[in-house]
Image 1: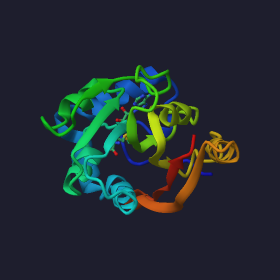
Image 2: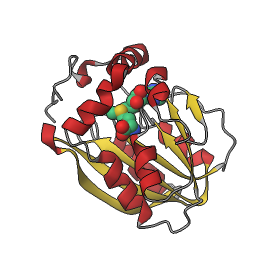
Image 3: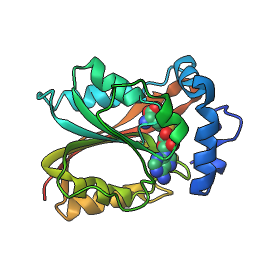
Length: 209
Ligand SMILES: C[S@@+](CC[C@H](N)C(=O)[O-])C[C@H]1O[C@@H](n2cnc3c(N)ncnc32)[C@H](O)[C@@H]1O
């Protein structure tokens, strides 16, 4: 799969280490530049995920963990659809600081490639948008997302098309299904960042542990 440059100062696909990724977003988040770019580029990932999620969830007080929440675009999309209770976690403190007050219930600065300090079966659902991409969060993080989600809960996420096979997401998704850890409800190619010719797989899975 060809790697695509989304036109930012550093091509996303060149990021290798967690520190490089953190510095990249700390810089991009300054003066709301990330939000402005996403608006200018017609980034549809958050809305596509929340629209898919809401078609399977009726309870507006469902408790959601937004993994890689960034500046809060998914939180805003959740709020726009009437969802009331969601926590966020991200690597970049600059992006976390950019989130409007009172949008998320709680916010955590974490590395999602590490074990999460969250008890088993805490959440009804996990959303993760734009975070499974080059040098960011690895497929094994899905184990933690499943662990913190209640039986019958939902995981809704995007995977950049460029890392889907090369970083083993295809294998990971199939293994979790074959092991009976979850079942697939939706899986399709979303627009995501179509204006930059970047698309993402969008998956919605139900935990069956
Ligand atoms: C493309 S942004 C998406 C942000 C937000 N979900 C959205 O849709 O606007 C990717 C996010 O992943 C976060 N991220 C990258 N690596 C991470 C890691 N190891 N742990 C936690 N967050 C990470 C970045 O800080 C950034 O906020």
